[in-house]
Amino acid sequence: MSSDNEKGLALAVSSSLFIGASFIIKKKGLKRAGASGVRAGVGGYSYLYEPLWWSGMITMIVGEVANFTAYAFAPAVLVTPLGALSIIVSAVLAHMVLKERLHLLGIVGCVLCIVGSTTIVLHAPQERAIESVKDVWVLATEPAFLMYALFVVALVLILIFHYVPQFGNSHVLVYITICSLMGSLSVMSVKALGIAVKLTLQGQNQLIYPQTSVFAMVVLICILTQMNYLNKALDTFNTAIVSPIYYVMFTSLTILASAIMFKDWDQQTAPQIITELCGFITILSGTFLLHATKDMGDAPAGLSSHWSPASSISHRITMNGANSKQRPEDESSEEIPLRRQDSFRIP
Image: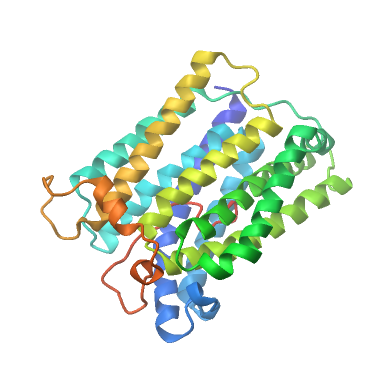
């Protein structure tokens, strides 16, 4: 592993620590704000007046700064999947602080996330050599990535103006798809900004180029869109459903966007690519397993013959918004969302 990849790895892990902890604080802030004002899921912004929510946001900002910097040193194929480590942080803190029981299958899910992350780290591609933000701009304006970006923007606009008014509060995929699509573009722009900042600190001023301002504008638009619709998703639907679905969609689309724009896998062999994909699938398995066990409540820690992750998930995914909405007065269910929900990378 190169020195740049090592720096990116260290920053990504520290980012997971901060972001994983921030979700516990932010979720409690959303619940408290919803109990005394208009909920985010129905268009309210009362959480902006809740100090607890802002405490979680500040903690998340610290994590996202570390994450932002990580993209300047390591490829998205390495940094993005490591976000699953925040699942473990959230689960452990929920067990210790919120007294939520971490069941046997949840522990197995944590182990799978660690194994998958280790596999990806050991086989991650080397960062592409870039000497100027103009080099990133050339990659971003190639026909393949332009077609992807135009497709993303068109689909997001259709979802916002046509599907959100009709199905936003009853179909979990509407909000999550918007966040995931915008997230894939925001990560590419964040990476470009990170490279610009790194080169500027090394004495090659990149802030004088208009391309840097364009990337910054894209990041701002994507962040605001993600924050808005991710807050709606978290407040409307069970976070044990939002978390794994969002993680899968966000990470998959980000890896796809990075492969198209930065061509991360061009210098790798087929066995290396297959190993990385296996590591990613292992992380996905751990993610679903960990969040599926959250609905086991106070059942015995042993495995019940009447419970399965598949049945739990299928039971909670519903087309009826009334069955899937979280109510502010339900303080007994303190679900912990996965990393990158509500995050700037969203960064």
